[in-house]
Image 1 (spheres, rainbow, N blue to C red):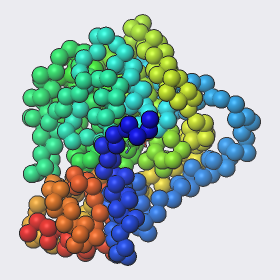
Image 2: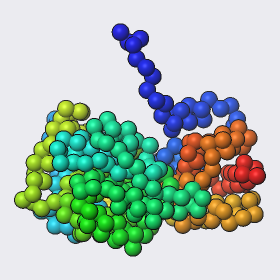
Image 3: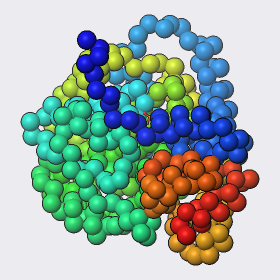
Image 4: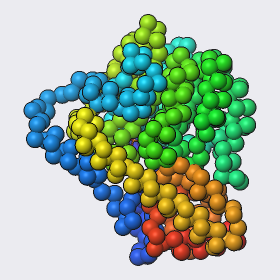
Amino acid sequence: MFENYKSPAPDVILELMQQFRADPRPEKIDLGIGVYKTGDGKTPVMQAVKDAERQYIEQEQTKAYLGLAGDADFVDRIRTLVLDDAVSPDCVRGIQTVGGGAAVRLLADMLAANDKCGRIWIPSPTWINHVPISKAAGLEVVTYTYFDPATGQIDFDGMLDDLGKAEANDIVLLHGCCHNPTGADLTLEQWRATAALIAERGLLPFVDIAYQGFGDGLEEDAAGVRLLAGTVPEMVISTSCSKNFGVYRDRVGTAMIIGDPGAGIDKAREVLLSAGRVNYSFPPNHGAATISLLLSDPTLTSAWKSELDEMRQRILGNREALAQTLRSATNSDRFDFVRGHKGMFSLLGLSAEQITQLRNEAAVFMPPDGRMNIAAINEADLDVIGKGIAAVIR
Ligand code: PMP
């Protein structure tokens, strides 16, 4: 009966990986895949994480199953990292998940299981998996205006106009920081206005934060989510440790529910746990246990923070160099906006045809939406990237 299947819609990122691998040109440049890279194109294990892993393995006593909710100490440390004291710990319920992706899925399942829950408003564009996950969970998806490709900036009036049409108990998905794929983040003023609109219309914010520490710093990147958490009565958050601890393949994340302790957050958490139970049963231990140990040790924590800051500084340096290169290659200020974007990505506003031409002519690989992985730029490739882009927009 297997012949009965239709192929699922292709995943553009996985397709791009295959195209890149198959391309025989030695000078090819991969600016597509969403992982941080050092100047020599590597994604190494962070030293603080390696040290924490060593210590953890020494002290590991058992490999019996974790509970469904995972490592409670890990979850609490991530709660502090993301929320600090924006809300009382009594008002937060969290669980460990299989990366940020599963956190998004379990929260979507939990919300879809609530008869009161309305549609989910998702920014356009957004992380490639938000819409499929929401639909698979059974939520009705509506998109809201977010980005203006002509200016490289947020279309904030368009965003507020669209969200002004949302109804009570609709969900609003927001990126906590370092918006994927655009790189355009809300200012704190814009967070404040968004929070006011959400509170006024009785909407439920769903913040997905997958790059804390990659934008302006660990605290700065959480300022929006903290402001929102202090403004609205209820909210959900998905977090990922894939990027800021570099533990992509270990699959480490959390899902959190915020609300009044008397207003059903414990029941909501039970639904979240059962969504995990029928999906993958128990979360994996290693990555979360390592991070829990790291964050409990002041020396390892401070080593991790300085490594993370070095990564962030490298991205900032790449942004500056790219902006300068594109300015001289195109003889215009069209791409100056990459300087002000946050995190690993920038959407350059090139068409799918221009992206194909760039791949064919300059061997520069990016997904069809033109999301550039700024963290993957190598200084030696800047000239090729600049000339390639200048040629395709001519
Ligand atoms: N949310 C966003 C916005 C992301 O960009 C990503 C990963 N690229 C995720 C969630 C999922 O992260 P993870 O790899 O931890 O599942």
